Length: 178
Image 1: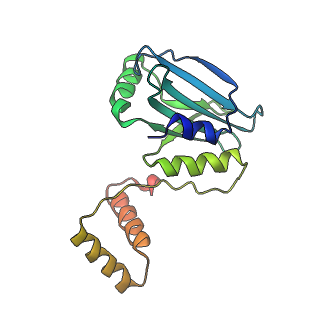
Image 2: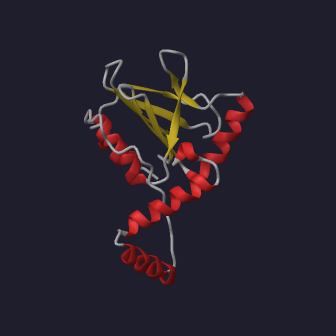
């Protein structure tokens, strides 16, 4: 999970707001820091953490230019967050666009994926990579088999894995996610 130091470096130690976190899913010591660039069509980054232990519960990156929001929730607290959303009857979205449509979070699982997206957003890049990194784990025997398969197909191992994931998503009727 992203650390406070990681987040502070992402925002270049620029804090614009801070407050106690109003929900209970992260405990009584949950605090929120924000770094907003001051532009309506700009960006903001947020970190939710324990102000006693410094455990990071959640990080968010909001790209108002492109209408995108990215989030990582500490795996130890995902269920607590989902439960509180359900209890509150809350729509779990980042904000509403000009037409009143919710801008939903894209949840990320890989620290470097969040960091790269946040860096691009802060730098004002418009055409950054919006694909989501998915952690995969293979034993040595399977890894060798898949690498040979990719070689035989004259593609990279990453391309093979990406194709397999897209096919699995489409097979399960989730074409919007492919």
